[in-house]
Image 1 (cartoon, rainbow, N blue to C red):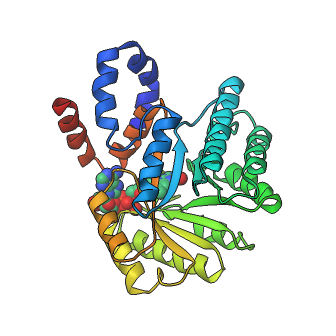
Image 2: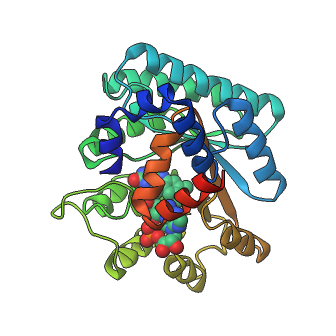
Length: 299
Ligand code: FDA
């Protein structure tokens, strides 16, 4: 909801035209975002790797309906892959398909995705597709399945809160890479579960099912209840599962889990559209609004 308000108010133009607002909001966003540009994303990524975590990195953007902007986004991701390759850094490049063409046509998203896949082939670099609103799930899964049948190293995110997800997971019969999240979007009640113990139980069942199906699973959450259950059930002890957390969210927890020997991946976003990313983080956890205000006034 916050994001659609941001879009309707044309926050992008407002932020770009008001340097003072830009500066204040940006200060709050920097808790969660590495910076505006690729070198800042890479520097933060190197630091994450140096501290013993695995790395995901995202060039922020979504819902791009201008073909030229989709090309620019794909070009930025190619440059990111190239830089990771040149620096010998293992990393996972994450993105929304709606940033590289899905809003125009699934075939454009597929063409851009497979071009990125060709560039990453033969390296340790993975490509990881984020999951967006339920209205896009069929198209995202279809592009993913088509590309993953041709290229290894492409992963997909599934949202535990959607009622359809157990069936979607069952439909992914070839072992691959899967990230399981609760889901960041507001969805209608008849399609989804709200945050609840029932959702956590579904989340854990999905993780167990994905492991049984032979997938490499990223358990992407900051929820103590899920993390404790995952550890109690021994799901992190094999080589098939890891925890994945967002940059700047519960960093002390990530540090403790890492020091206890658990495999942890940190998801580092960068890019000029950081204000949308900030809206996401506030929407999924409203107390972040207070934190953002504190960050803004202390800037
Ligand atoms: P939940 O929201 O129940 O929060 C549990 C606890 O974690 C909170 O009580 C709080 O302590 C802490 N917490 C959670 N969010 C916080 C925040 N923003 N700030 C501070 N503390 C917070 N979603 C999606 O729809 N599509 C996608 O592709 C992705 N991709 C993705 C990748 C990765 C690596 C992660 C970690 C998450 C995503 N998400 C996502 C977001 C995901 O769906 C979900 O909104 C967030 O992870 C928050 O949910 P939790 O599982 O942490 O639990």
